[in-house]
Amino acid sequence: MEQDPRRVSGAWVFLGTRVPVAALFENLEDGISVTDFVELFPGVTQEQARLVLEHAARSTAAAVA
Image (tube, rainbow, N blue to C red; front, side, top):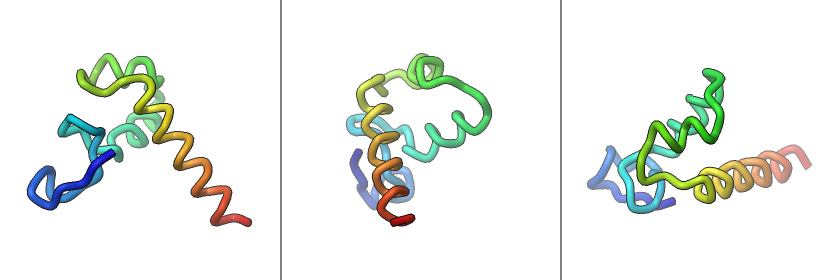
């Protein structure tokens, strides 16, 4: 992930893309699989999506503990 205040209004995006990380979560909420998400957003890899989801899981677990 990367963040640049001059790109995509400073939103966190997948490295090397203009795809906001939030788009992954929005699409998952809408029932789209990670595989389909990666196909819909060229430049985002399965590995990138997996790492974002793992980070979110760790962050959530830490917040609950």
